[in-house]
Length: 507
Image (cartoon, rainbow, N blue to C red; front, side):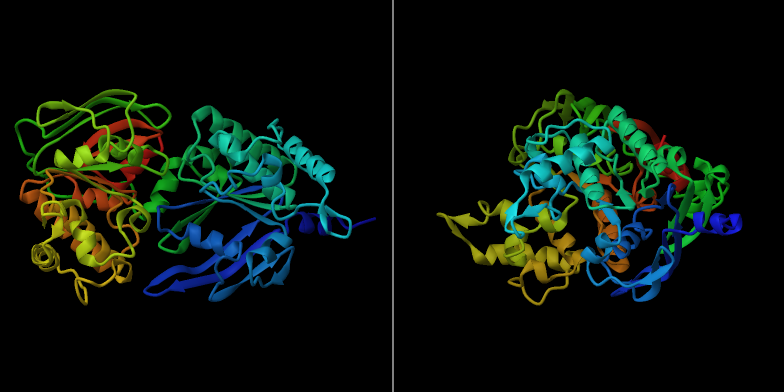
């Protein structure tokens, strides 16, 4: 007869354990002595603000990053990964936040990507076995998706399910879900949460990463809260509620305030008015006004619809309904070039992909929108181009070796200053900024903030989107908060706290 004490001990042994994980990058301690235990048949959630270290910790688990110090144990045995395939071989599966299916492959091919069954001495694909295995995995998650459909035609929800099916097809015993509902509607998200509960009940260990605290509280057996690269709390579900999680995430008691002196708002006619603006599937019935000399912050979490709203105002996408008024005149841009001509500029979230032209120099990057003004008889007047560039290099203290230096070789902060100079050179009246300090160092962040304040004092109307609540509070005069495509409220920055904003953003 077996020892019941031994059985209990075995049942409570973590399937995955991280001990003292430390990971540093140049100038940044991303993880500092982090411990984590994940048990089979349980959901362990990771929560924290952007930049808390959650993504780095996930990347360590799946061997995209190697820890500088620390130990990883699976089934009680110490392991060392040298590549992601090692983690997959031991049963760790990641469903990333960004969809990574191959669009022109079928559902079946995407599910079995990397684990395709072969025959005839591994010289040919065993299509029959492949179809049977893909159908088996989809049946496991309770979904009926056409195995022969191309991934590109699937809804976002079905693409997410195919990613989960792929991880299960690789025999994942530990499933990491990174913001899995960020792009889903409420009904789609609810179905996915039900699937997570089913997988947990079948014995799968699940690591769930989300900003949506109601989801975390619904699913979790345990919750780890991270802040500034450290684990600051480990809570059983019975100990947790939204207020407690928020308090641990921001590192302050509810009574403490992070205030900004009351701003004196400009009066008179707004330069930009947005009324009932909607775009199906992205945001709905958004209204606000922006005055000259005002900084309006838009706070919210991933998937809230903030970026989509800015792109629509800029003419990059078309609205479904609603009204945009610029300087008292209704407008509907067919293309961003029309917005630029009317004095609206947009600094996108993905600076390296959408904000810079990496193979061009600083001067070319800064003056592209105004080349026609700098040209005569179709020839660029190089002296004028260099004069404009030099003006903003000096004004913003941009560190360059020469105006011909490739922009890709500048730091993130200096790249962002070049982009700001580019739009100010157009004479813009309204500046839309999406995550303006993401991926730049602390000193450069302070410099960008200083520049934006000075621009507002000079009369520029600025709309700032940021996931960093502290940044929004420190920069803005007024703050609007979005959640799942809807406006949840407006609050003066002088009355805002990180706790208030986070509570509104997850409501």
